[in-house]
Length: 269
Image (cartoon, rainbow, N blue to C red):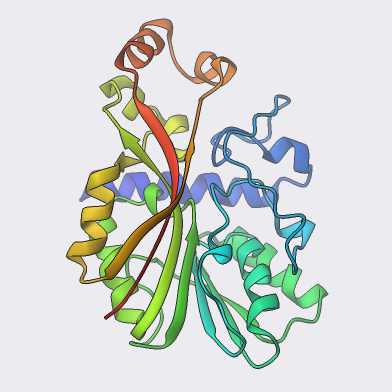
């Protein structure tokens, strides 16, 4: 348990730091910005939200690995929950889709991110978007209250995927749906890679095997599970050289590990 707690503390620290970075170019560091600020810019995972209705540039920290709202089937009047909401990017896209009769709730455990998200919402006068502080392994939400749950490149960062998917089941209404974009693997990293703090906080070393990820979703009782989008991820040599020694890099490349962003849909029966 101590190991899992340490990993969560690391992620919270990194995302608290990310929320304080004001220069958008400095934020686009590796997958989920494992070391910010930085003079170098890498956009391994960043998705282009700019053409989506509801897009708010101040809320886009360049850390998403998919566009889950596009596949979530959000309808006017829905209650949508975003897990790991960050500065509110996916929440504001979802708000555009639920309309004035719907509700959007973002959950995050990094206080600085919550502050940034709430400032973004208040500045724009959004009254049907709220942000709650909480651990998505134990959501501060009642049973069966959500029509849709979305998440973008967050669940892989936390050690207890089994708890998260059981919580998703609990919070969804019967028949309600989810859409998650996340990072998964095909193959194993060297131990030195997995233990590297920057690679872990950067959404890469924290990822689990694709089949294990999908199996955890099914074990939680969720059904109609489908991978609707897959995108291959390549780590630039500059990122590897900055955070890893030569021996570890050689082991990593020799292992030929497949790294993918997947977008998964499904529902609670």
